[in-house]
Amino acid sequence: MEIDLSPQLAKKVYGGDGGSYHAWSPSDLPMLKEGNIGASKLALEKNGFALPRYSDSAKVAYVLQGSGVAGVVLPESEEKVLAIKKGDALALPFGVVTWWYNKEDTELVILFLGDTAKAHKSGEFTDFFLTGSNGIFTGFSTEFVGRAWDLEEKDVKTLVGNQSGKGIVKLEGNISLPEPKKEHRNGLALNCLEAPLDVDIKGGGRVVVLNTKNLPLLGEIKLGADLVRLDGKAMCSPGFSCDSALQVTYIVRGSGRVQVVGADGRKVLETTVKGGNLFIVPRFFVVSKIADPDGLEWFSIITGTPDPIFTHLAGSSSVWKALSPTVLQAAFNVNSEVEQLFRSKRTADAIFFPPPK
Image (cartoon, rainbow, N blue to C red; front, side, top):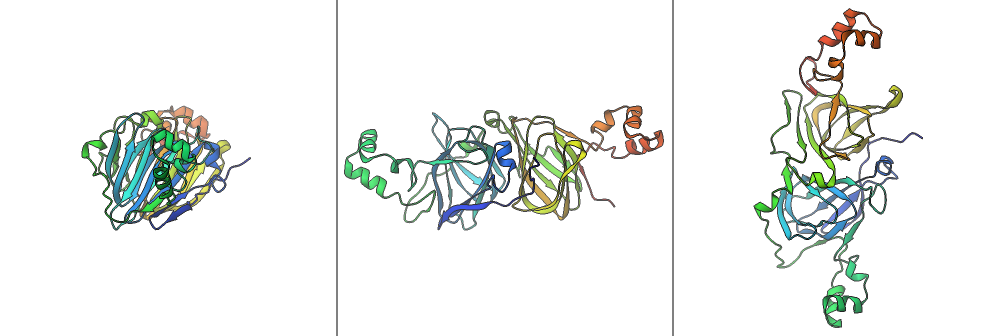
C-alpha cells in the first residue's frame, strides 16, 4: 500500500494564556507511524511556563523563535538550567525531565523531533507531567501521597488542590525561577546559527551538521541532525541516506519545490513546501529541493544513527563520477560523446548548486 508523503502542518493539542502545544498526528502524516517518529512544537507566550515533564521518547529540541530558559534533569543528575535562543539544538535522552520558560515579549517556539520506537503510541510523543491538573500527584490517593512524601493530609490537599494548570501555565506574582548558568550548556546544547559551517557554497547554501563530536548526547539517543539554509533559487543535489534511516524535515522558513523518487524509479512526491511544513523521506528514497527566490531553510533529524552518511548523485563526489566511462555508456545506453558531456558537468565538489546564470 502506498503511503502519502505530503507535507503537513501541526495541529493544536492544548494550551491557554501561557502558550500552546502542537503536534503532528499519524492520521494526517502516516509516515510518522510507519517510521516510528514523533514531532511536536511548544509555543510559550511571555511568562509562559511549561510544567516539568518527562517523555516516552528520545528527542532533539530545536529553538525556532525567541529566547528563554530550559531546565533539564538527566537521570541521576542535578538540574541544569540553560539560557536558550533561536538556533539552539538540545539532545534529550530517555528519562530526562524538562521545563521551559519564556520571560520575553517575543513568543518562544521549540520544535521536537524524535524516535517513538519504544513509545506507548507509535508516531506520537506521550508526556508524563510531574505537576499540574494531569500530573502524577492527582492520580495517587491522599494516603499514598502523604506516606510517600511524609506530609499531613491537609498539606497534601493544598499541594494537590493548587495544581489547576494543564501542561502550560502563565506565571504571575513574584516567582523567580533559577537563573541559567553558562557552563550548563556544555554538552547539552549547540547553537546551529553560530556553529562552524560544515558546508558553505557561495550562492548555493550552508549546512551545520549535529553529531557526536559537537553534541555528544546524540550518541545516546541515536539521532543525527542538521540545519540547512538554501539560497534563493539554489538547488540541493539529489541524494539519499546510506544508513537504513528516515529523514524527517521541518521547514523553518521560506518556500521551495521538493521531489522524491522511490523504488522502480517512481516519483512519489512532487510538491511545494513552506515554513511550518513537516515531511518524511523513507529509507533509501532520493530527495532533491529547489528554493524559491526568498530561499529555503530546514531542520532535519536522521533516525537510527548519530553520525549519518549521505550519498549525493550530482557533483564531483557523486557516485556517477566514481563509475568507469564504459560502465556509464552501457548503463545509459549512450555513445562516448554523450557520456563525456554528462561526466564533464558538475565538476565542483558541491551538494548545492547556485541558480543558472
